[in-house]
Each structure stands twice: as C-alpha cells, then as structure tokens.
Image 1 (tube, rainbow, N blue to C red):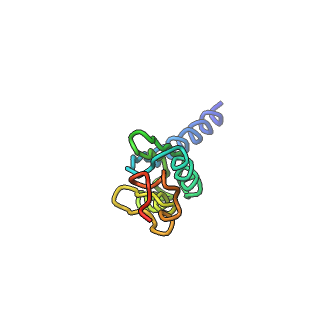
Image 2: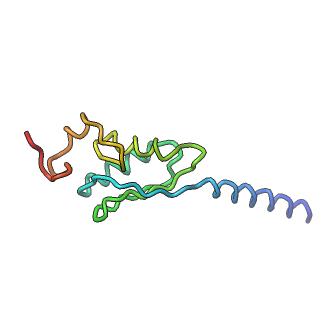
Image 3: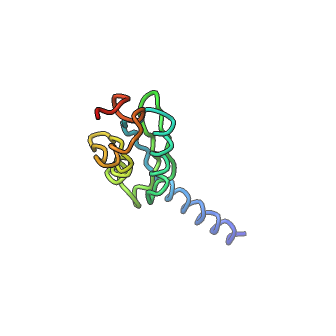
Amino acid sequence: MKKILVIALIILGGYINASAQDTTAVIKSTAQCGECKEKIEAALNFEKGVKSSNVNIETKEVTVVYNSQKTDINKIRTAISKPGYDADEVPADEKAYKRLKPCCTKDGHKDE
C-alpha cells in the first residue's frame, strides 16, 4: 500500500511541476478575419512549447498557453509575425505581409 501511495505522489508531483511551467500570454495582433485566425493559429501549432492558441478577431488578441521552459514570449511574437501579422511591438514580416489578401491587411486593402 505504501508503494502505491509513493507512486501516486510522484506522479502527482510531476504533474504539478509540469503545470507550473505553463504560462498564458495575450498578444495584440493585426488579425482581421477568419483566414487570419487560421494562419496565426497554424503558425503557433508549429512553435515548440506552445500548448494552445486562440485568436479573437473582434479584440485582435492572440491568447497563447505555452511551456516557459521550451519557448518564450519573443519567439511566440516572431512566430506570429512570420505569416504577415504584427505581434505587439514585433512588426509583420514584410514579404509575408505583401502576400496577404487585401482583406487581411491592417487597413483592409493594399496600396498598389
């Protein structure tokens, strides 16, 4: 019986330790539509340490839950900028931004 209790405590301790490393961040973005949401969330799915992400189009905020021992907020901001979106003070990748559909740009159209 003592062995079972010790094993349970070890497992529980490992779970609590893993959960303590999770961090939630809210990042302002320039997402405009559902396609923007899909692109940003897809980019974050490939970022090591990101556990979940959700883009709110109305508030233009990206909520990210990540393991702070595997990634950091600056890497997450960079991952958002790569497909062409601003992430807080990190500007969108210029080449990617130019490839966005007009509805996905900051002002809803491109100056050509």
